[in-house]
Length: 190
Image (cartoon, rainbow, N blue to C red; front, top):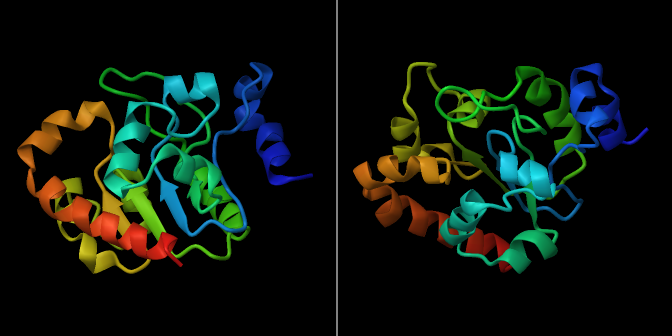
C-alpha cells in the first residue's frame, strides 16, 4: 500500500476519507525546498491543492517564485502538520492533530532525498522541528531565523489573519523576506 492509501485508511482519518477527501500535500523525489505549515485551510480542502489561496499567494511572493515554479517544477514540496482541514476554532482554525507529524513526516520526508531547505510556517511546525523553548514566541524565533540555517528557515504564517502581525513587525519584510528570496533563488538556480 502506498503512503497516501495508508493515510486514507488510518481510522483517525475516516471522517475525511468517507467524505471523499484525500490528504493534501505535495511531494516528489526532486523536491529541494520543503514547506511545513499548519494544515490546509477550507479553500485548500475544497480544491485539494496546497496553498491554493491568499496564504499561498503571499508565500510565493515571499519566496520570489511564481505559481508555475511552485506547482510544476517538482522542486517545491508541501508537508503540513496535518493533511486535512481541522475545522474552525473560536479564533482561526483548530490546531493540527499531533499524530500526523509524529507518525508520517519522517516516512514521507524519506521519499525526498534532495531537500536542502525546510520552511517552517508558524508556531506549530517551529515548536515541533526547532530546538526552542516552549515559551519562546514566534516573533523571537523568526527574528533569529539565521540561527536555524542552513536546513531550517522559520517564517510567520502567510495567512491574511497575520496582517496585523506583519504591520507591527516591519523588520520581517525588510530583512527576513529578502534573505529568504536569496536562499530560494540560490537553491533553485542549481
